Amino acid sequence: MKIAVLNLPFDNNYGGNLQRYALISVLQKMGHQVEHLNIVRNYKLPWFKKPFSYTKRIIKNIYGNDSPLFIEKYALLESLKKNALALEFYNKYIPHTTEIQTVTELKKICKGHYDAYIVGSDQVWREDMTKNIGLDNYFLKFVQNEDVKRIAYAVSFGSNKVYAEDLIHKLTPLYAKFNAISVRENSSFELLKSYGWIAPKPIWTLDPTLLLSIADYKFLITKANVSNSLKEKIFCYILDMDEEKRILIEQYERLLNKNSVIVSLTDTDKISIEQWLNNILTCDFVVTDSYHGVLFSILFNKSFFFVGNKRRGNSRVESLLKMLGIDSNIGKIDWEKTNKKLYEWRILSQRYLHEALS
Image 1 (tube, rainbow, N blue to C red):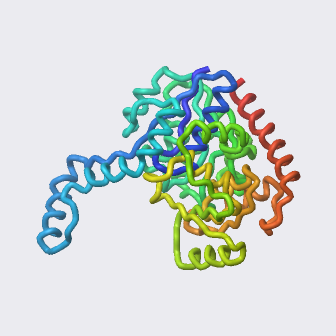
Image 2 (image 1 turned 135 degrees about the vertical axis):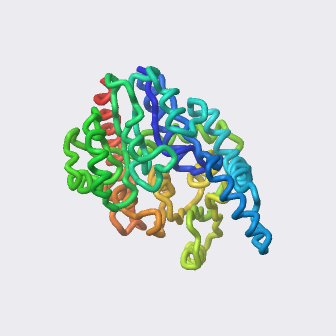
Image 3 (image 1 turned 120 degrees about the vertical axis):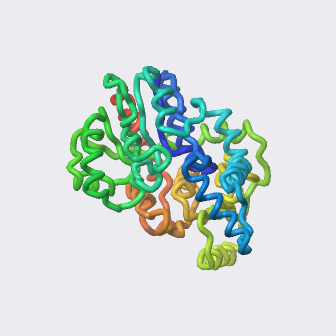
């Protein structure tokens, strides 16, 4: 079966790239031909906005606001720099379409080309994360062939924010067209119920990255040029650094008598995806405010502390801990019990994919 995978636009996010790699790898192992729909951010300024925007920028520069006249070109160049290592991984391991910037291009690439569409994983049903092609297209509005399979795998709303009534009305018939739905967070069930979306009945499945084993990720690491083992060190993967988190890291350094290495998304032009994985694999302890930072700590059986991240949402981490039977006191983890639970969920999640595609 030829399958298209649709999730958030390509960027430099470690977890985002690994979840699409994992899902595609699992589907390939099942014998399917898979492509990722390569949605990219459109940095071009619409022609009708150019006269006003350029005039406004020129006036600002005259009055001392030293900003680039061609902001879009500057942003594109910065993006290419930040995304270079992630793009190298993407091109090497993730089969994908040509770049897609508009819904028109998306429809053209997909027309009559695929037997099934899988939406997910990640926050593909979070309204403010889907502006590139619109939330309705993450409910597969763009798909013109009525005979294809429509599957949502481990989709996330990202927060408990409720859709507006007009949006619910707009998306309801699109939801009903899906053949199978699975969600990443258990909190999604209440949202779906409140929208009246009960058919198809949603189930709870693992984030795609947990469908692969430690050996699968070690294979990625061994094929890459990684260095600087973090043995006897604390690895801190922090998305949104602030003074409170800095103080916490210093406290753990004193408590564990270990030095720390701090990495954020601003380091993606220096630290590859494989190096990021190796940092977690080889460190002694993890401090993170990232969902995938927690996830890979669990997969690699590393003790960790989740700092919390209200801006990006904590419910997904809480849901993950509940799914794997990990107590909120995450300093004390029974790894044998956790690994057994993870294996059971992996079998259930893979079975969901098999049945949805059968």
